Amino acid sequence: MKLTKVFYDGKCGLCSKEINYYKRIAPKNIFEWHDIATNPKILRKIKVSQYDALMYLHATDKKSNLKIGVDAFILIWEQLKYWKILSILVKTPIVYSIAKITYKLFANYRFKRLTHCQMANQKVIY
Image 1: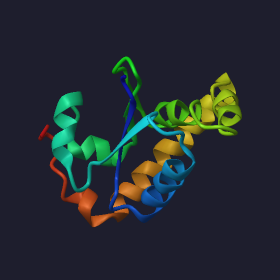
Image 2: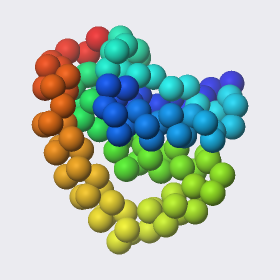
Image 3: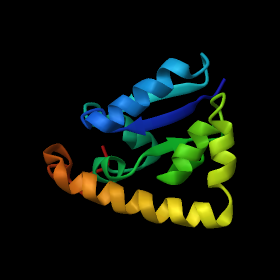
Image 4: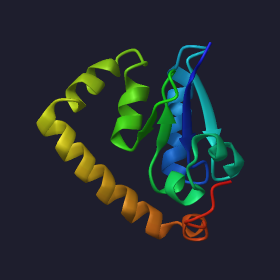
């Protein structure tokens, strides 16, 4: 059975806190969680550099389609009880546009402030 794979920054306090919450509430056998800050080699399978994966949340659905940023969050939320409502709301055109812009601004701000993100090589796909 194929699982939704989530590739997150485990060295980011905020990221880890959020992902750990999702892990606690997620049904069994739905997600496969990958901390790409400490194990970047898993990114080879999806052909993404650690730099890019640290910049934005990445996830693959059960058909191995890559989702990035807000789309990765939507993919997660769609599979979590009570969070499905948020996924529906965020997919509406106006909210989706605002969410993408807001997420990109926040992700860039967070990325610039974290030393381990700055040390990631932009070109290397492990």
